[in-house]
Image (cartoon, rainbow, N blue to C red; front, side, top):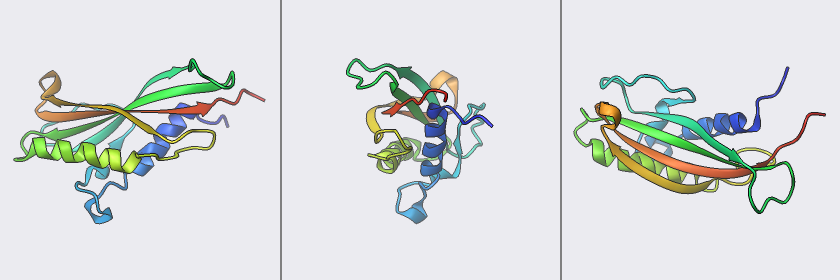
Length: 146
């Protein structure tokens, strides 16, 4: 069986970590109840959810080896606007995402995650939700086929 590519393995490990985002674990929200690796249509009756999206893999200018890669991904949070405090909830969710992933070392041969940027979106693409997108980056060393 072929192993998953490192970027996908990183996303799976981040998904597992984000699933711990629960009030019972001293977070502000229960955003970890629904964490996805694949996009899906959003229904305004859905519960809040997180979705991970891979963005880029690059060869860094300051790479120390030929196999070093920089990898960025987005964690997108959706909170239905039918919730009375949707704006507050999306801000709290973004804070919880940052708290959960701050400095998280997610895989062998990878560096800790680094927060890069977050943005709030009100009703993106007409969807009845507040959205927050949080950009993270890391580096890993690619190991060629043996």
